Image 1 (cartoon, helix red, strand yellow):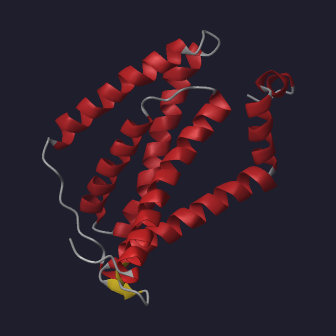
Image 2: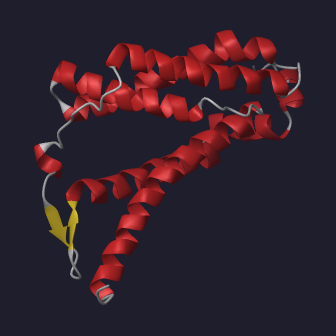
Length: 189
C-alpha cells in the first residue's frame, strides 16, 4: 500500500463532494415530496433511473447534450406530475400505507419498462466536448464534468432554496407542508 499524500486526499475530498452533490439532489427531491405531500415515495430512485435513460435517449435523438439536459428534467417532472395526479392523489386521506405500496409497486413497473424499452445492457454516452478533460486544482487534476456536477448541484440547491424561501409560491409550499388543511381552506389545492 502506497503513501497517502495530501494531493491524494485533496482529490478524494473533491471526488466525495461530487458524489455528495449527486446524493444531495436526490435527497432534496425525496425530502420535498415527503414534506409537501407526506408521501413516502419508494419510486424516487426509479424516477431518477428513468431520467438517466431519458437523458441518454434525448442525447441520441437531438445530438445535443445541453438540450437533453433541459428536456430530461422537464420530461421526468411531467411523468412525476401525472403520477401524482392520477395515481397518488386518489389515495390521499387513506393512510400512509396506500401511497407507500403504490410507489413501491410503481418502482418495479418503471424498472421493467426501462428494461423493455432500453434493454439490460448499459447505454453508451459521451461526455460533451466542453466538459472533457481535466482542471488543475493545484493539488491534482480533476475531471471537468465532475466539477460541472458540483457547480450545477450548488446552483440548483441555491435556486430551490431561494424559490422556497423568497417567493409567494414557496410560502404556499411551506404553509402546505406545515398545515395542509389550512391551505385547502384558503382555496389552494
